Image (tube, rainbow, N blue to C red):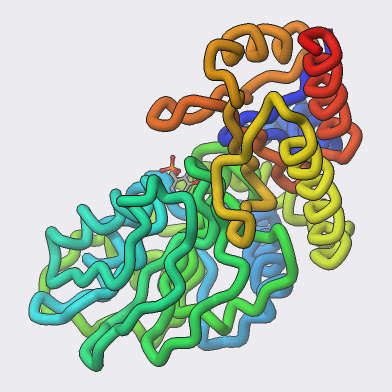
Length: 355
Ligand SMILES: *Cc1c(COP(=O)(O)O)cnc(C)c1O
């Protein structure tokens, strides 16, 4: 059975990536070696990691002020590593609380210094992105989540602030053209738009480092990984290779094309959610995510039947986050419009059957 994967993460990747990754596991580039046994201290792996770092720098238009790292521990470790490395004990970090992931980031930051949550939509079920807030003068950095994977909102415009912006871009990185220089630090778990689970992309403006007094364990200090070109210890070789392949695919498509496709896919699903009387969108229209579309059944009694209908049609991973219920269609870069059309067809067929 052909299945279409609408899961929020790990997520769908381009078919060419699956194929090349599979071939590399059996025999990497005809070397008579599997990629899985190749030392990270070889020219072979150098080409992969520096190739991947170069593609990130290129697509984010970075300059030498920035460094690109592939770390481990997921985006969730970055919730702590960011304040550990950037926030002085007597400093204040500002956070915009737009969802479950931002909230987790806030909790970790509180371990290291003062945290000011400058805006939050928690009380409204994270249905929108708050836009009016004051940072104050003593803000070391402003942390925000560009796409809220759970509730399905996205920040379509970056706030204009003086403080360096730290962005969790796990679920919308490389979904549209971007200028990395607008940010002080960017992090993203790979398993949504960048590649396979097991590595985390971190982009850092280097002048933000070295301003805290506390001792930082070697492996948790960004400077260690910058100094050793992301090769201080054994990196996750295979996930990084999957990132390299995916980044090559992204670059070949071009971010403009990717953005246009993402817009077309989102329009297709949201038009159906708004047209079809059986469904209601969850979030505020202006803040709808192009990556994760969340919706509920107007009649909640129909949800389990609809979920079953989806699964019979091969559409999987659509059950809403356990904290939310309802449905979530994740449509990352590698999802093609034909996949979303199948989902829309299922929604229309469901309406006909019940109508
Ligand atoms: C998935 C996700 C995370 C968590 O990533 P892990 O790599 O599993 O730690 C954090 N933030 C956002 C916005 C996400 O979508």
